[in-house]
Amino acid sequence: MREGEAWFRALTACPACAGVGIRGYKKGNFSGDLTQDQIKITDSQYGKTWDLSICGDCGHIFANPCPTPEHLSSLYGRVEDPLYEEESAGRSRNFLRILRRLEKFIPERGALFDVGAATGILLDLARRRGWEPTGIEPSSWAVRAAADRYGIGLIEGTLETATLPEDRYAAVTMVDFIEHTPLPFEAVRKAQAILRPAGILVLVTPDIHSRAARLAGRKWWHLRPAHLSFFSRRSLDALLRRAGFSIVAERRYSWTFSAHYLLSRKPALQARLKNMRPASFLKRIPIRLALGDSFEVYAMKDTGG
Ligand SMILES: [Zn+2]
Image: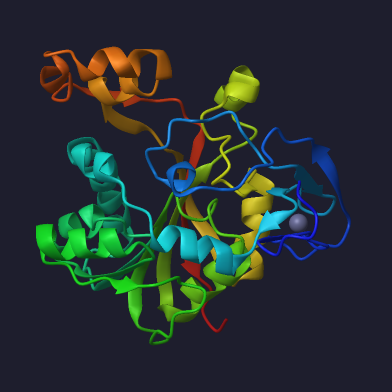
C-alpha cells in the first residue's frame, strides 16, 4: 500500500456496525491504483483484494485501508461498460425474479428507487410492471444510456450524498451495490430515510461464508478490488438493524448469463472468442447459475424508526 496518498484511508471502526474491535483478517494481493476497468460491472480480473479487516462485534469483513468516497465517486463517474448492456437478457431474468418477489409485499406497486441503476434495465422492467421508476447512478455514460435506450431519467450521483425526498418510496432496490460503497451504513440509512413506513429494501450482495466462496478460495469471483465489503448473514443483519430495518424474507440469489459471457470470463478464451463466429449464437443461450453465493434479502423499514 502506498503511504501518504490521499485516495485511500485506514478505517478505525467497522463500516457496518461501527464497532471498534477490528483486527486484520487477510493480507491482500492488490496494492495498485484502482482503475476504471477494475470497477466495471463486467470486470473479469477477479481474485484480487485489498488488505481485509474483520469486526469482532458483527463479523463484517472489509477493505482496510479503503479508497475514499471522493476517489471512488470520481472513478465510477467516468466508467463506461458497453458489455453490461450486451447481457441485458440475462440481467432482465435476474431482475424479473426480484420484482415478482417484491410485489408479494407491495402488490399495489408505487414509487421504486434503484440504487446503482446502471443502464436502467431493472427500472425499465419495473415500469412495465406498473411501478413508478426512479434511480441513481454515478456513471455519466450509464445515465445517458438509460435515457437513450429506455427513456429513464436517472439522478447522476451517489446515494449517500444525494438530496432526496424522505418517506417517499414504496421500495428501494440495491442489487450488487452495497459491496461497492465505502459507506454501507450511510447508504442503507439513506434508503431507510427515503422509504415510506413499512417500505421494502431489496438487497443483493455476495456471501463470503457461502459454500462457493469457500470452495473457490482465492479464486472466488467476488474477490475483486471494486468490492470493499464482504457480508455474512450476521453482519448484514447488524447493518440492517442499525439502520432501522427488519429482514422479512431472504433467498439465495442465482444468476443468469449467456454462454458467451461466461466463457468470456476466462481470460485465456477471450482472444479466441473475439474471432469466433458462433459468439453471437452463444449470446442467445441463457445459463442460470445457482451458485447460491449471494444473499437476496427483503428488509422492511421499521415503523416509527
Ligand atoms: Zn461490525
